[in-house]
Image (cartoon, rainbow, N blue to C red; front, side, top):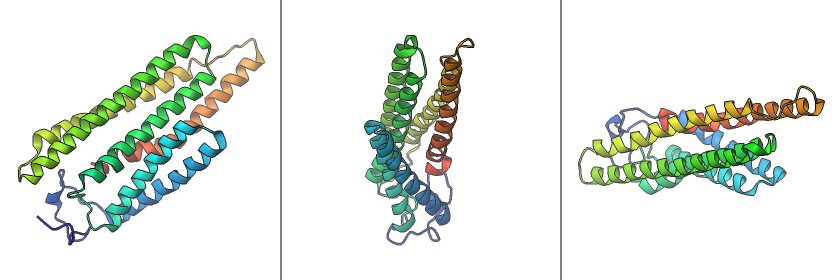
Length: 229
């Protein structure tokens, strides 16, 4: 096995990767810049809107990802060999923190523009999303830990890798369900054709949902790209 002290993007063997991909230094630096910018963007947004919990989750998640890609780009260890703790905190927990922030932000925004009758339903769905995310995070962490243990013993971690892939697949399913959830509730906004106020409220909510989706989608897409595996 190539030493991590000598392993660079130019010299690492792709066999060190579970999926045989060859990471690119320019791509890693681009991700580093993106997450760094999002870190400051969410910090400023949180200060303006005083959303402490959401801001903490989003800022912490983007900070962890920034650190992870900094190490990947400048630490001569593109495959993350021997860095399970860094992977666990920076990539796995970082992505979960960002998604939890998105779930809480969407719940807060939707509750502002829906009737009170949907309040309990929103709370139940948000709680389900959060519990599902934590379960998936634990599943991937277990797969990653067992895989690292098997690798250290010189074994091929295929069963453990399957556990991690199962968690990743469930993550994508959860994101798909979240998108459907946003679409459905955007259609259930308070709307009254007889009251001008109802129309303005509904229209404002739809605009905010669109802006919210545009701001959040880059984070979701980048986190769950195959490159991160």
